[in-house]
Length: 636
Image (tube, rainbow, N blue to C red; front, side, top):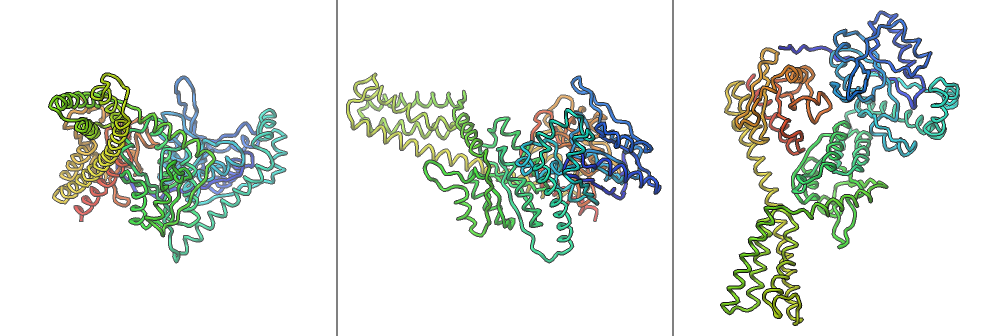
């Protein structure tokens, strides 16, 4: 049982620089000593001195929390010990290298998440970061330095900090310090001077850091003035790595306009057939959009332009950001998605973000689509063979009965339509017409049992048959996709409507709890765990497993799983697989909340399937919003 106590949030101070060696850690430690003299309880959580004597000397006289040793695959890592810091609970703690990635098995994937937990616990934090580690500036920095920075922080961490102190140093002085070995060893310094520490690079990075600090000041100045109309910026999510540049550009645009930032993913009938590489890239793109504080939404439909247009109209979007690959012309000069959007939403401002790698990504996408279209299945093959066998028998009977070749051709056109409607994979719809032509020519046109065609009339007839069958199958395939899309939307609306009705009928907290589990299980086909809240404490969990999806559902009742649920309750954040916190858990844990009040914690089984589509995540979010409303009205 844990009691949720209200406490003030700690204050975050970032010591910000344009490059390593400008003196961020030194300045942070110097300021910490001044605070200690003033009577503030100061503790060092983690300091990376890089063997610099001046920095190491400043660590003396301040209490240090020992680092935590993490053993992973035979390697030893020494990380900041978050639990010891929370137990010690000083007034101020120093945690260096804000953008650091924690060792595997750590509670949080990134150090900035550790710092967020310290702040929620009411502890003030001093930390350091360089300009190249800010997410929205990644593409700009990479284009200047030709170095890809892997450790980055979301912009909101920087923008929402209580204090950002720019630690600046003249570039010539920095280069001199580097040559003297005050930043890196002589060997490392020489290599750095030839690569990252080129003077032109440093000048550009220094200018960017100064501008970033100025933008932050302007952001707060604008927040004071509420008399401006907020822009609504929309970016479209996809499976391409170049989509990340588009997302960062849209985020910077949203910051510049001080507008609302939304990321839209349009799921279609091909989304379920994504290969693992494309799916993982989509997850990375969605995760990046979340880090940049985008509101993630999804729609379902095969007409992507129409879905984007409809959402833009409904949400009042004023600016849409797309990648260059979206506007590529086809060989048939078909209207591009930009052309369609311009017609559907003439008042929508559309921004196209160029990328040098987009052509390569388009080629890879076409290659994937080509490979995906060549897939066969045993089920569809059996249906096709059976249908052709039956049609061939009927054609023989028709020939014996005296019908001419036109009747036989119509029978095989019928077979193309039947196979196209019954098979799931598109390749059958396009291959069968050619097989039909070969069968007609081989079995029913003189000379029989030969693929030779004597009459040119038959050539024309067979070509027309292929074209007609092809057109019918294309229309049939589109109809199936639209039918699947409509069925999915109808089913999700049915679940939401039923959930809303059932929750309105619920009279007690337990009724709402059980109905929540029923509805989530009905949609997700997964075990659902519900931790109720009783007198501001997490109570014994209720497990809903009607179909015995797992023989032993007690795997969700271990102390480790309970700890994750308690963490979600205390921090009001999601945790488990698909998040960056406590990823080793067996279930995804989400809080049922209304504003800052938590009514319970939901666990969703992630053992059988470790992924959730964006459509499923949005549906879960909608259901839990309905649950929180029902619980809120119950207390009134």
